[in-house]
Length: 351
Image 1 (cartoon, rainbow, N blue to C red):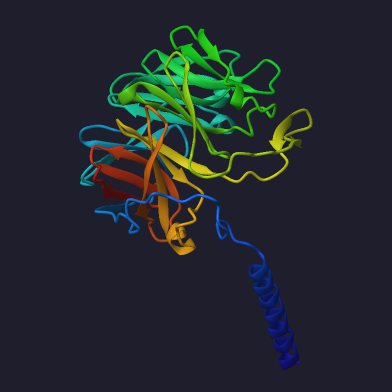
Image 2 (cartoon, one colour):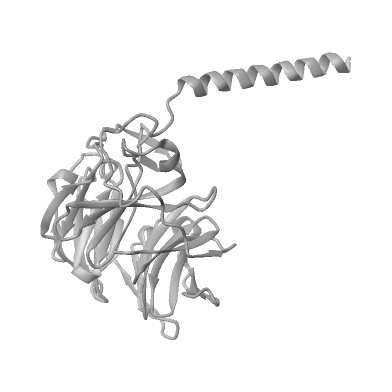
């Protein structure tokens, strides 16, 4: 009896293994086929880290730095980690502000030492001020829903918010003192009639050159604006993913609330962005035709673009932390700090 059971178990395991083997054999893996472009790699060898720091905290993103510290935000907006740049010590700063759990995300946190800024999208609320010894000010943007936001000064933020018909999104400059909309701008290429889902992306403020940059997630497009929301240029990343067609559907959140969602999967072209005084750096989700699949998958692939012109310069690789997902990066002087799951790595840069 036992022998018959074991034979059945082994037969099932062999059958399942065979089916999985066949599926893997006929299914194309991401980036297995050529994507129609080549990278201008500084070197085929990745930059290896000079230092590593392992952590157990629930960290999500590098949000700023000072002369002595790196600031790393958590998965929730109410706390962040202060890490000495030489990894000699750390501290945690807790934010004493009551945010209902359902409204915690999405959010954005920024540190421009000694100032801290927290944008809580679902509460339409901005917290800002000096830390750690001063109370934070609170500005409520009444009636203004936003999906992306960036701080450009103590008094002003830029948001990506909805048009009245909710079919598209536009950029708005907001005065934090009174919540007044100072300027709003529509970029024609970002009008997708999908509530901004097709043209979703990453918004950042490159303080050294006083420029705003918006990099799309799902197409090879990015845009540069000044702080009065004048479009300075539009540019393309080096890959060929210029189209992202999706449909829209509704998802019931409750009996009375429906949520608008994409009804097809969206493949990320651009994963993360950061900058220095001269360049925009984009972490790419596409393999160049002159790269092996193994090299692409074992490294973080970073493309450099001139901030002033948008022109592609070159690319470089940084060695991934083993089996760790990349989260965010920031350039601090002559080093690149990259956050992975449970690990922060520092890579020396030679610009």
